[in-house]
Image 1: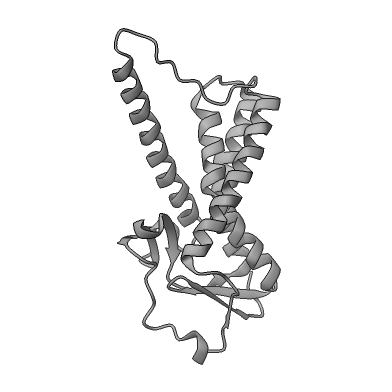
Image 2: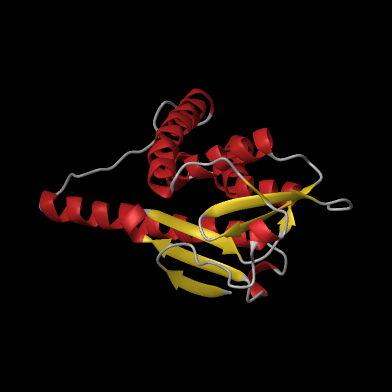
Length: 209
């Protein structure tokens, strides 16, 4: 696994137009981020309603600022929230990478930060089946949003971080859900998918799983 800062790296050995690949119809990175943000907010609200109506007792996040030093309490609370967000982003991207061929051990696995676009990403520098690509996209949502909700629903842990993480991850997964929809709509099941930088390409591939 490698770390990368900046735009999704391109593969010098991949020439999609010369090798019979079809480009996915997708927006630029900037427009994608704006659309994904809206999708994320909508999904986050739905998940918040799910928590509030089932296991959260109507309360998603509670922060107590009482005490002799309210400014310090606020600063500590903000630091805790930012730390939780940072940890959530790391776990989210590692869960994507866990589904790549070779998992985290492959040199083709790249975890990146494209800060000018407000993007964190897990990128695999190689082809994979369309169905595996879909599993890569939805795994963090299934584990960190639906999974945490199911844990609380079944075990009643009472751990206050679970609702916040679940809802926040749903918001972070807006891009994953958007990409899942575009791939399902445009790419047949028996196909392989590969990225060249930001752009996604696909081609029919018999025998892919």
